[in-house]
Image (cartoon, rainbow, N blue to C red; front, top):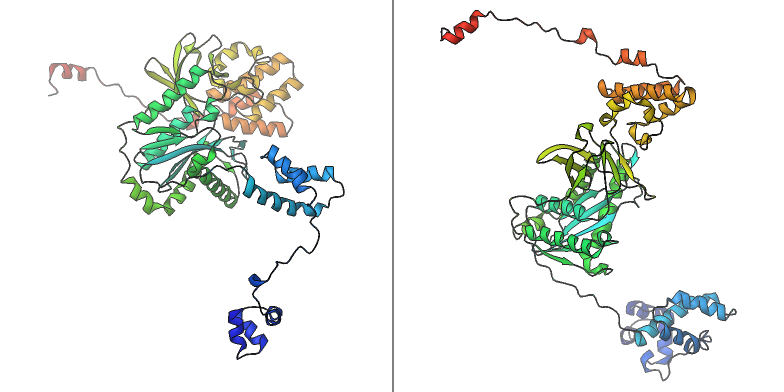
Length: 492
């Protein structure tokens, strides 16, 4: 007002108002009243009646006092039920009034204390579900249900992500954390997790204590102090909870730009995730290099990132572990094997000798047993007892590809059971002996499309070795006199 009055001395009202930054109407009102708004005797009152005057203090305030956690929208709906004549347009007014009442009379809220972080001090681990991406991830055409293990250094923002096929568990944490530390080249002084809540769920007290001891031992191996946030208090892991969202957005955008969520194998998808994490780290390269200098050195070797157990191979050439049925070569029947259980595989040992690696199976969604079947392990016995295929417990899982299963269904429809089982077993044997599983699957698919039954004679001829392609080997036997020279030393 003072600025307007100053300009008014030398300028018309519109010009003075424009220079003072007020409207022309305000300028004329100031000239007419001659007072500042703060100098008026009484503030301007309401222009219309208060629609909440009769119910706010009498009904809304008692609700707020009795149940402080009530949402404003719930109170609004209750008032509409009690007073049908109340206008729905007062909702915003009621919400503002409730917000103001809570600011003056409400309960104290939890205070977030922002922390000052030091380089090399803290790293955090957590898991995030990848099932809500816009592009579904598939491996060789099959949907991939998975989590991402996510590690992050608080100070520099270094990130590492690892694809987890199972749930949150010690094995998943140990593998992902050690991969992150070795990629980083050092270890922070503190490591924080979210108590592995999913891994602890439904565990007995002894099992939870064992899991805690193993986690403490893992941190001790890397000279890190283990810490856990309180269950259900996500903001205590705030330095990684928010980056979860940014990482998932980056993965989602990369999948959209890629144009497809299908990958040839799990290794290709893991390389895809590693590239995204590497791009994010390149943006913080200077801070990461600075923090690396403050990290603790790594130990000479990694520690165990697996569970170890003993299983016995039964007469079915198999064993069951964690409600999953695995087949193994029949020569192992009766032996006790030492199994190292990783997140995505099993390593089998006979004594100290490593025998093989099996893909890790998972239980079905309905709680029934899972199956990891390799037809090569049992095909030699199945050839002697082909009718066993008809009612085999894991019949659907023994077929290595969809074409084999559909071929068997077609054989059962067209032929007697005995003949159908014999032909199918011979097809599996052919795929194994001639190492032509994929090629034979293509031929079977073509036969199905043409509505033909497979011809074993034709298939054996097609996949038998070609004599013309076999190399010609000429063996020349040396004269025995050569050995006499060798023995007598004459050759020297």
